[in-house]
Image (cartoon, rainbow, N blue to C red; front, side, top):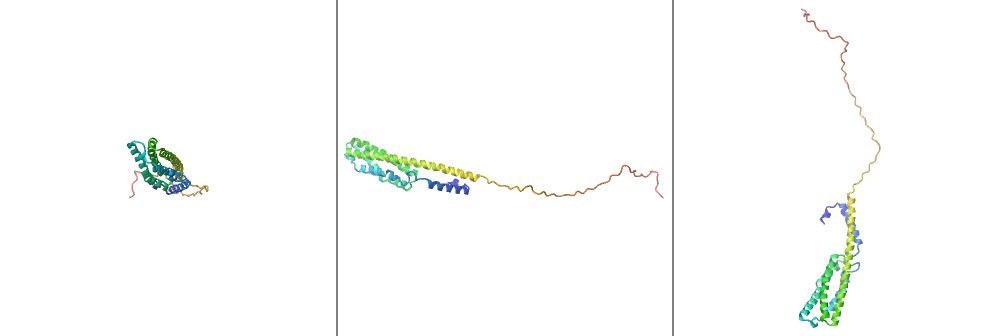
Length: 227
């Protein structure tokens, strides 16, 4: 958020107001108002746990290596239900508007589905009919829950993307308003009164001698000074 520190105060205030209004208008993605990730997938997880508790892999008609692999998958699912997945569900329910938190649950649920699928495939060949039916029903329920959660995450991310575009547009508009120069109105009261300063010129006239005046007499060279 360091780029926000360089924004003008008025623009920051506009961003805050827009963000607050947009947040208030956004529904609660990704799961929708009044819903949580646990409510979407919780019933399916309970069915999976119940189906696993009702089987006995050691009695399945299969080689020991096959039963060991199936038993290991069952134990892995049970640990995930009570450990990793339980923690992810708690985080997602605490932040019902967080798409990343819900997606973490979805990714774990996807791996859980693959593991349960391997158990079901083995049960189809070696388990009693009632255990096979319970496992297949649990797998189908988990598949539906996974699909519902995926749809909720997609809808929530699309909603947030729309709101993000609106917020960016509002910020851009606020920034444009911030850069708009202030117009100055000039009132014309007519021409200003002229202020004239009169400077008198003092002229000195030199009179030229007239061309008709006789030239001044020059002293004669033969005249002598008086005694």
